[in-house]
Image 1 (cartoon, one colour):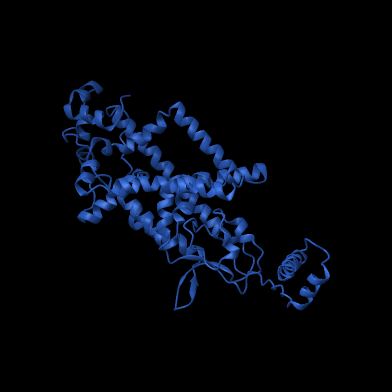
Image 2 (image 1 turned 60 degrees about the vertical axis):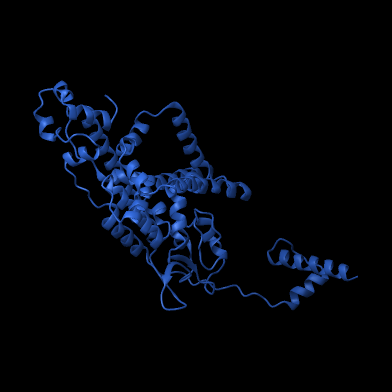
Length: 404
């Protein structure tokens, strides 16, 4: 008897839910009595925002500026490599220090070496400062490096937006597949962290000074210059997957993003929702690139949050959604989008984009090439054969890059 009454009550409660959501038009007598007895939920009145929303145009501007900066760095680095390979037969250009920011694994090794020895690295120092700057940005402004600065993240974002524009939607994987694939980037990160953690200061110093590490930036460039068929197919598949599936590379495969996401868990900045003014429209969750249930949480603490502010941009209610930091005990203070941009730019200026102005003799010495082959000697050499006959010049060609 008791079981039957329990089943009837459960069925009636389910009917109440269906009626309130408009799925079912009529209710049974028992469900109707429950509806009449239950207090009516008042629909919250929308108080529209009266501020000017500019976070996304600002973020796009910073993304494009950083992409342009990286294109300039890439072109200048390519010209520098060609100059070294040609035996000074092309115009001499300076090696851009910013290329070292594309060496995150070496940056992680340098960070551990600095933590042990308290000595700044002499090889690829700009990579160390870039790594520290990006880490600081993630700790202060969540994983905003991925959504505000990273050129790969920018490309990934606009690839899935292209897919949504073309096909009207992106493919959303089942929850079990999404969780399984997201674990891949943490497995890759775990492999690199284990490898670095198992090394003491001396092996790290030996590796950083090895011929391979000294020209790892050139090897990275040559990977794309002489792209093989297999690598080209993999790259094409990643591009196609990024068009179909939202943030495929960043969400499932990027170990750098996984590392910065774990660091962002210590961030005081969080997307915060004001429950009292929220009208439960769900626009924030639909706009979230990380597929987080923003409309169901008071604060977003997930390592997947990139601080892109897209959820804040689409929220129609005044003083409801913001990126905030702790203020007086028990309260939080919203951070305007301009302060995030200024903070990121300041950290880049202090750390990531600081110049490491090294003369050619120092750069050659860092690559373990005898410093006799200087710029003046290259300039006064009558031809490439004379340059090649100089022992130091020949050694420099051998270490810096492949033959022309």
